[in-house]
Each structure stands twice: as C-alpha cells, then as structure tokens.
Image 1 (cartoon, rainbow, N blue to C red):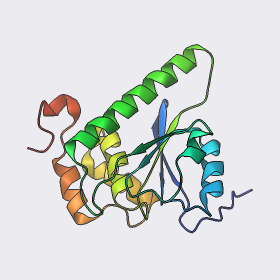
Image 2 (cartoon, rainbow, N blue to C red):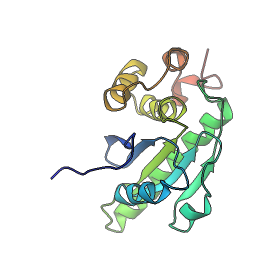
Image 3 (spheres, rainbow, N blue to C red):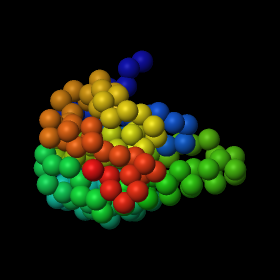
Image 4 (cartoon, one colour):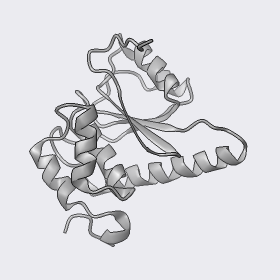
Length: 176
C-alpha cells in the first residue's frame, strides 16, 4: 500500500549511513504543522533546522521532544561558516546519541529535518554538506538530492558545494 501524503511537496528522506538520516521539507505553516508532526514522528526526527524565518511556533515541536534550531541565512545563498560549524556539531551530537541508544538496544535511527521556504535551496545545501562530510563527492551529493527532490540546489549553491572542503581536509578554511 502506498503512503499517501497530503502535502504539496512531500518530505524527502536522505539516508546514507546506518546511524543518521536527513529529512528535507518545505516550511510548515500553522495549518500544515500537524501533518509535518506526523511525518517527523514517522521518521524519528530529533531535531529541526529552520533555515528561514519562523512560520510556526517552535514550542509545538519542543512539546514533542523535537529540538528546533533557528539558523536562518539568505535565500539562494550558501550558509555562513559559523552555521556550517553548528550544523556539523549537531550531526556529531546526533550520531553520538544514536550510538549510545544502540548500546541500550534501541534500533531507531535518528533523523534531522531541515527546511527553508520551499525546501529546494538552503535545506538541501545543508544535507549536501553532511553527505560530503561522510565522504561523498560534491557532485554525487547534489545528484542524489536532486534525484529525490527535483529542482534542489541552484547554480550559486552548486559552485559553493563544488569548492566545499570536508572538515578534516579544510583545516581553518572550508572554501579556499
């Protein structure tokens, strides 16, 4: 049976490792938030990264145990360095938590949801960075995301990702 989704742009799951997943969505509104909450529960979302101005009260997610991170940056642009650092810290923390839960017998894989207005630029760029950090080439990361979320990542963002250096390779400079 197919899972029907009443959202115009359904969530896009990106899963490449056994200990973390990413969910790219467009920005929930007050009226669609209950549907998103169902999706977040379905995919075991532990954190939501808002890359755009808030369109819903974060307290509704926090009541469900989901931590909300407001990391807004300009539409169509690349994330500033401090935001990339925060994103990578969140990924590391989520992976560490997953390993601890596995030791306790939990089989649930945590998921970080990220959204911008349409879920086509800022949010997919963050997920592409995560994939690159996991060893995927920049172009392969963009191709994977675009296969699952048509229209994702504009040409300016693509150039940024092509020049992005993984944390262990970059030293103090990610874009050199």
